[in-house]
Image (cartoon, rainbow, N blue to C red; front, side, top):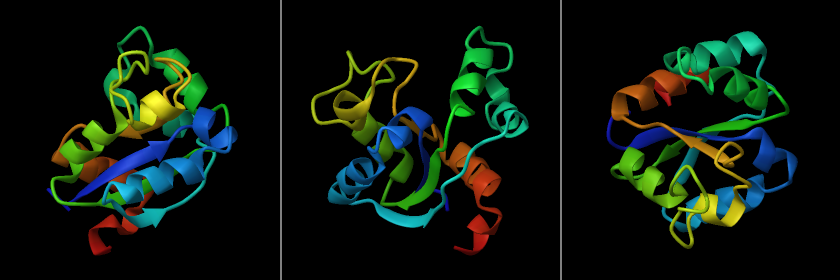
Length: 139
């Protein structure tokens, strides 16, 4: 997985607004290949576990509430240098600061409702992929 695969999540704001197809098309046009995908509604326990690294941060509770507010779409993507390439493709957390043509500039509503999650390291990509796709090691 390391190097060539990463995890992304189309968040409830973008999924609920019907932007998932456009985001996937944007990523595929950027050279990413979808290896695995599913639609799900995170429970509070799942969101708390997934975002547990942020538990002590002031935004943790609102993040959990947001991520459990509707369906989301976790995906494993493949491309050379996948983690760095995906983070470039999605842009800054705050869409007002995101570069033109990035997912967040195009589809995010705000810094909090920012359309998409991306793993921030190869190690987290592996851990996060296994969280949503137990079979990730065999994909």
